[in-house]
Length: 188
Image (tube, rainbow, N blue to C red; front, side, top):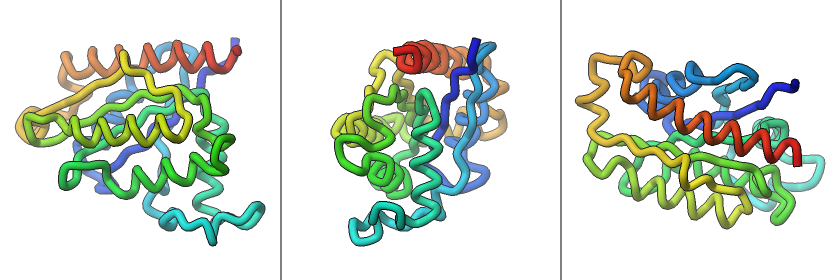
C-alpha cells in the first residue's frame, strides 16, 4: 500500500504563530499510511508576476512550491486573517501553484482549509477568500473538511493545540477527510 502524501501550507510566516502550531498538531494526527509535511519556504517565493513565469525559467522557489504541490496527493491550508482577508503569502502560493492556468499543480487537487484568528469570527473571511481563490484555480475544496478556530489568543495562549483534546479531535477529523479524498484522487 502506498503512502498518501499531504502538504500543509501555513499562511503565517512567524515561527511561533498559533496557526503554525495548529499545522504542527494536524501533522501529529496523521493516520497510518498518511505522510503530512509542512511546506517551508513560502516567504522565499517572489510575488507572482507573469514576466517571471517563463516555462523552464520560473524562480527556483516558485518551482519548488509547484513541484511540492504536484507531488502531494492533497493540500491542507492553515490561514490566519490579516485585515479581514487572506495573508499575501498564502494567496501568492495559490497564484504560483495555479499556473499555467487550467493545468497548474492545484488543478483537481483535494484541499482542506483551516482558519484561525484571535477574533470570534475565526478568520472566516480569510477562509472564504481561500476557498474562492482555490476554486478559481481548479482545486477540489472539501467543504466538509473545513475547520475554523476563534479566540485562539486566549485558547492557546499557554497550551499548544496538540495538548487540547477538542482541537486535536477536530484536526484529526479534517486530516482524515482530506486523506480519504487525497487517496481517492491518487487512485483515480
